[in-house]
Length: 485
Image (cartoon, rainbow, N blue to C red):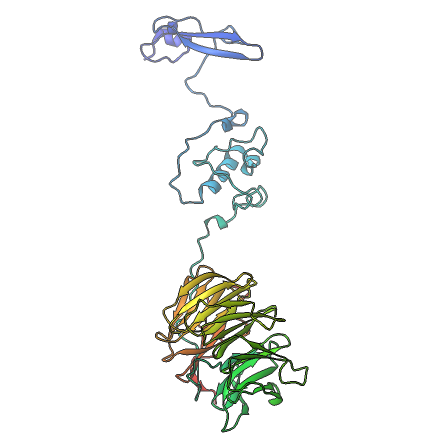
């Protein structure tokens, strides 16, 4: 029970303490007043006074401040990391500030940009962070009018899944098991051309219609096929060294050009020039606008030319040969501007990046097994990856910065890579012999591979250009096995 003395004064004092031990002294400064509470002695006390009144006032043991008039933002909390999940502290503190101080404080500017009455930046925060202009919690995103974004807690996207089995298999009788030939190409008009023995067949992907384009006769055979970029005309290289040009829509031969002494196994179009590579070690440049068989001859390889690709801007031509050389030519010079000799086996696989100019990828044969990347501006090798198998083909995705490679001895696999990390996206198997042929669909999502096992297999490996979502195991064609002829 309270003593009479404490009831009289109206103060709740701890046991063992009386009013004689507490004194309030008032000091006046030049610009403001300060009140100092001092304890002189446990047993001595002077009267309790107030700056505004000399009369004693009745006090309570509790004081509840008015929130609107209190400067609570001047108090900081302990700088201790929250056990809550990462990314949630900032959003939670903004909501809590808005509830405590009103909507004006819910979207205050970052430190140093707010008004003097804005809460301290550590108010209701356990760890000081500086949000940059791209932060998902910046005021431009989490403002008073825009609400709170759900992206803060969005989990990272899972790795893209590539189906491990082909969704379509075509029988391709007489598809040759020859590393130096190029017998499969897919046009921009969605027509697949395949050289089978002495004939070239066209397979229309939209309706699976098969058309026999030509038959070279018993004394010749098909060694290479290549569509123009527009997809209307197709060039054919023959075992006798001829280069033929056919109208793919009318199945009519337009032109026959000579110049090579032996088989022509590789062809490459740019906008107006057709280049052909042969076992005679030469590269011929053909222009259909002139009457002569060829307009120039590029001499540089010491063995059969088996790889040939024009850059996307038509300025440079890359050629690979059985002499282990990778040569780069420009559109005017008769001599190579680069001689790249790091490969230790034949260079058939060549691909120019559609995402970065002057970036060239090449693959070596059985004794090399490496995919190498080059900067053709200065000839520097950027990277080299040992794939473990003979590299037969390379093709760059136009939808994403990835590329696909096909392989021969000894694993006969198909591999999808991310660039520039060269992390493996997928490894696909199914062919029983070397995967010597590769072509890509015009939408950039599907590849077709061919091998000496006389099959063509269609794989969904790349996402679409608009929606890079995981590729589903479905396509234009139902799962099954049909004949191409």
